Length: 287
Ligand SMILES: NC(=O)c1ccc[n+]([C@@H]2O[C@H](COP(=O)([O-])OP(=O)(O)OC[C@H]3O[C@@H](n4cnc5c(N)ncnc54)[C@H](O)[C@@H]3O)[C@@H](O)[C@H]2O)c1
Image (cartoon, rainbow, N blue to C red; front, side, top):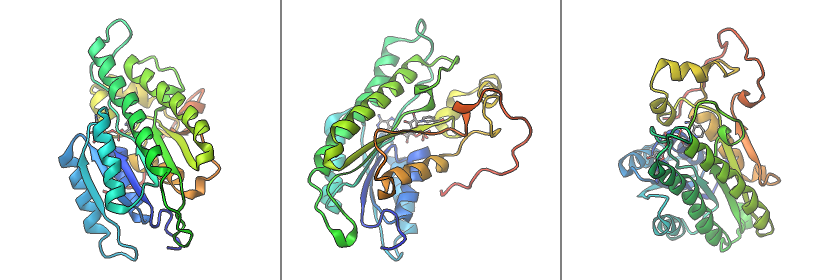
């Protein structure tokens, strides 16, 4: 379908019930993708699917979203999500391994409990591994349909974070470590699977105004400690990450592999932060 960047493609998005996952789901659907949305919170994920099914049912290229409950740290559940995409829509072109947690009890190396460390690695690292493993298996079998612009292989996007690249003096040792692992894993997968037409990249969001971070920054002190460092004078919006994910998902990024795509409002490039009020408002959410 001319103009639609994901026409006829099929995408799985983990963490599709909130934040980046929800915005990406709506954006991908608006660009022609059928979707399987996976989240540990089935209710939230179902709401995203219902919103998409309602909004895009009568479009030029009707798309559909299916919601599934899935704990990404459990291999069988991730395998079932990928299988659902193949059974329901015939293929898997895009795997967005986006689900992740930042636990409220995550702290510095001396204070963080082992169970918080383990839980964080299980979801943020092992969950991404399972997503990549089962996506690769499915993408190898993707039938080619040149007329529809469909081909073997696909695009895998793993959500890391700017904290995998910059040192933060506000401690969250388990989370930071997990996101560093996502970057390293992504690079190796990108190299190993490049000749199979499978592109693997990571998205490194800056601090966003989503429940994940806002729940964590639960005092004005914690909030301002971050806000002070943002050149644009505001937190990012989930839709701004979704737009970068769309680029990585589509064939427009055909020569981009193993990339740490930082979408951080310039945070990682700032030495001294700009002053004054932002002149432009943040973009509107799709929800
Ligand atoms: N919000 C930020 O500032 C920020 C910054 C950098 C990176 N990130 C990363 O972006 C990704 C998305 O974060 P967000 O801000 O949209 O958060 P969010 O909390 O709004 O959404 C995360 C979603 O993941 C789901 N989830 C949690 N554990 C899960 C599990 N075990 N299995 C399946 N689903 C699970 C949640 O139910 C939720 O719907 C995460 O990987 C996060 O680490 C966020």
